Length: 279
Length: 316
Image 1 (tube, each protein chain N blue to C red):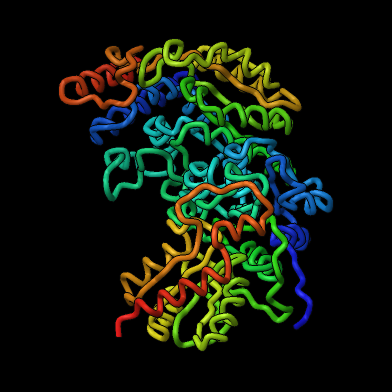
Image 2: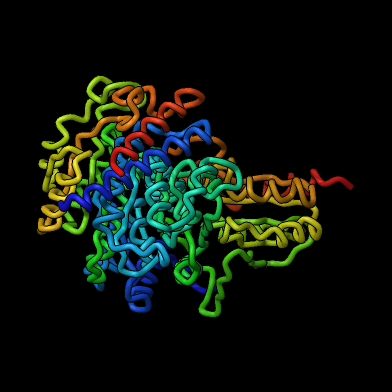
């Protein structure tokens, strides 16, 4: 990846992280930890990969993105706003009465959202349905979905994994945001979904493993996944929960808690300092 | 009296899907390993490229249906009512209901008339579950003629529809002149002493009850409520005003089904006695369908009994 493009991505993802903090702090609720860990992947998809048009969010033939871990919505909303789907100021009204940005993605209220999600396990199925639909009508668009690693504990994920492989949905690319933490603690302690790679392999998927904060690796994995024929791909992205805010990193408690007061100020200061460093 | 022809509503569902497959070139049908029983297999034979088997995985199937529908295609997803409305309730609620996507759920083998398979497969809760989902349309056809028309109408409507269909061959009570209007009940017999509002296979029982009541000098109005949501409030209140008492009849729990829906309207709009015929907060039991229906008093005789009680309960 060229340095200019990488710098653009780094700066954009940094702004996305500011949106995550601003939105959840304003809302006094939400899920900053898993939004920060997923920020780089979603930023890459919308700014480098997906064929979407902010002026025509329902454009026929567009690529689709389904945030199966719907609680990562602050990251997705920030990306969509920066991409031009709606005004970035909407982030201030996240989770508020009268604001359009619901706690979890809503396809009927928010431009750019392709599927309402939030109840874990359902997004990957919906994404597989979209991919199947494209196959039936010969459309060339791709469908991307992003799962949490804790989400892999939902049985429906594996129903969908079986279905997508059996129907040879090579136009479906799933990411696993593998930050190793869920609400109640480490995924390995709660009810381990590991080994994630071997499970997907056994279900008939092409598996790639990357550092989910390295744009070169994200790009490389997506390009390889796009070359896979007759099977869906999963990119298991090792990430850091709370990435970019020092005191949130690798702390499960920040799964579903917003920063307030001095902590919110510190988080924004850290992100602003990082943004200035990049600029 | 002409010979009674019996046909299962699921048979009509299969035939209607084939008709619709020709009409809607991008229509897709899903099933969860029950295509022979739900009759989606009829569609699969004619349009194999637009039929997909999700296997024994109803939850995934419902969200898959939502994903397909989100791309603009018409989707029918089928399983037994127990698994379509029961097991996959939350997928129907969040993936299909909340999104208000154009998915039609063809739920067969509903109610006690599943018979021999017994309680784990006799779904008496599906209407109650589906009624709680905002924007969900629920249709419970009385016979094969009505079922066929309802499936066509469901396809023409943009939004989620729950089609409640039966395993058992039931008397065909409608003829070729039948017209289906979603949300509009049908007055089958006029009467002045009591109204019997029935749905599904209990509509035929209500017609039998009409004759039994008539022979005892009781004039019953018989209404077929095929669409349980949105419920025909106007016809319910008008019936209450006209006859002063109502009996509901359904092959479903008395909790949350047609009886519940009618009682809700009557309580708020025009209070009169409402008595409910249905399964009385109980699980099912194995046996031949006809025997099971009798065992749970899903009969004309029970409608007659409740009709008399309802009339007696009227305030003079």
